Amino acid sequence: MTAQIIDGKAFAATVREKVAGHVTRLKEESGITPGLAVVLVGEDPASQVYVRSKGKQTVEVGMNSYEHKLEADTSEEDLLALIDKLNNDPAVHGILVQLPLPGHLNEDLVINSIDPAKDVDGFHISNVGLLGTGQKSMVPCTPLGCLMMLRDHHGSLSGMNAVVIGRSNIVGKPMAQLLLGDSCTVTIAHSRTKDLPEVVRGADIVVAAVGRPEMVPGDWIREGATVIDVGINRIERDGKNKLVGDVDFESASKVAGAITPVPGGVGPMTIACLLANTLTACCRANGLAEPDGLTA
Ligand code: NDP
Image (cartoon, rainbow, N blue to C red; front, side):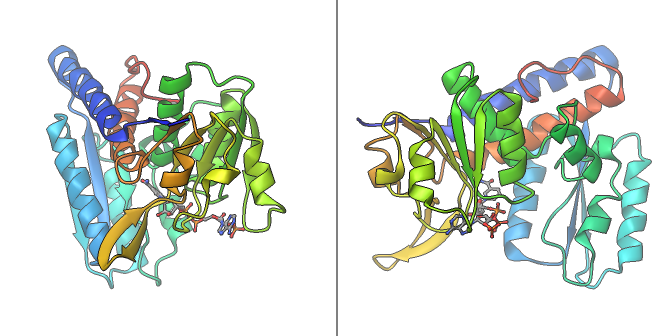
């Protein structure tokens, strides 16, 4: 079998188009422009790249982008004061604090100081609780992107066996909640899981979010399964820098029914879902109908 490639780049473009169309109508009909504030503390090069890309794509879909770049030694008090200001700014519908934060700042405290209705990353404890109890919440962008691709590929996910490898708060756990919400039978695997290959072999859907290059080989994958590879790992091969996922694409794509590539799979969906979440937050804040197909 040769797997169908799930093209995250193309899918993300359709999500952005949908968001842009809705933003245009929102502006015409109500004069409201959704706004996303991104806060970056320090000069971590990867974070700078992400923040630039988020700002650019926000503007491209017709939203307002507000970038706040703070010095690496910014005090917790000053950061919390900025978040408070953004919480109370009616032009700001989404707030994202780029992680990781410098070590002297308490990430949990900072994230939980964001107004949950503006928490477009979906990391606030209230949103985690709402998602866990099946209520309307802001959903973390990466797992939301994975869910959208799975729904697009399968239609209904009901009754499917899903294995999520990884139990982080930003990917693994919310991914498992979303799959459960779509009536999958969900197993969460992690570093202490016994006989991981056998666990993965039972899956119709495998979501790998581990952070270990090409850890999941094709012979762990059930024939015809759908494989969503969240991993982004930089490796050196044949003297060149290369991005690879957590799944060994070459062997897995020979057995899987469908698979996301790295790069070009889950990655592009993450920012597209951030834009979708900002639009959703804006619609909710203004008591307007939410766009179809852009939330969980
Ligand atoms: P974390 O490091 O927070 O979590 C990794 C998880 O993998 C942990 O739960 C860990 O288990 C588990 N794990 C580690 N080793 C093994 C193993 N040998 N067998 C089974 N499970 C294992 O990572 P994240 O969730 O933040 O990210 C995962 C990957 O996804 C990374 O490559 C990251 O770069 C990528 N990523 C990609 C995004 C995108 O936009 N495409 C967005 C976010 C992340 P335990 O809890 O027991 O330690």
